[in-house]
Length: 80
Image 1 (cartoon, rainbow, N blue to C red):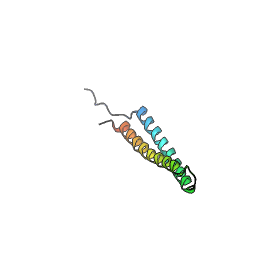
Image 2 (cartoon, rainbow, N blue to C red):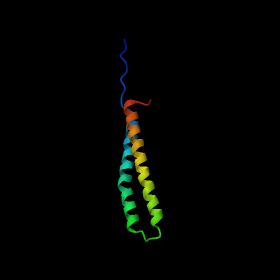
Image 3 (tube, rainbow, N blue to C red):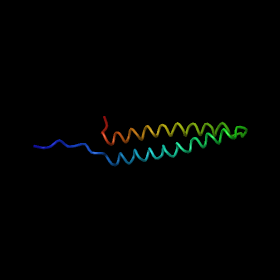
Image 4 (tube, rainbow, N blue to C red):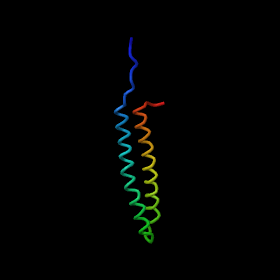
C-alpha cells in the first residue's frame, strides 16, 4: 500500500517569491526618498515628473509585495 505523497515546498518558486519581495523592499525605501525630494524642490521645473516617478515607484513596490507574497504562498501550499 502506497502512502499519499506529502506536498513539499517548491524551492524554485519560493526563491522567485523572495526575490520579488526583495525588489519590493528596495522600492519601499527608494519611493519615499524620491517623493520627499520632489516636494522639497517644488520650484524646480522637473517637480511634476519626479513626483510622478515617485508615485509610480511606490505603486510598483506595493504591487511587487503582493506578487511576492502570492508567489511564496503558492510555493508552500500549491496553486489552486
